[in-house]
Length: 139
Image (cartoon, rainbow, N blue to C red):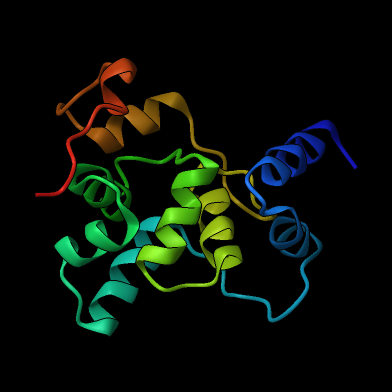
């Protein structure tokens, strides 16, 4: 087991998610089709007929954060955010975790994303990485 996997499992243990993360890493269960958060989240929301506001309320995440994850401009959610997304979209945790790993280029078979590509995806909205995490709660 490499150092990154050990750190991920330690973080998951802190948040009471160790078993779910270990199962996702070991590939137990059905093999989901690899997709990014920007592919998974909007498709699930539309399939369920939910509005973005409902996802924000269920997940307790800001509207800008959820929309950024849906449109692919926010590409590095933390473990708690992934857990909140799973609850907000009523999806199994491991599916959202794998989609987040695919988005970040760390899932098996994922294509790495360069910093230049990440800035290009964000456009001219907020090129400063320190501003990316700031958001307001859904109202």
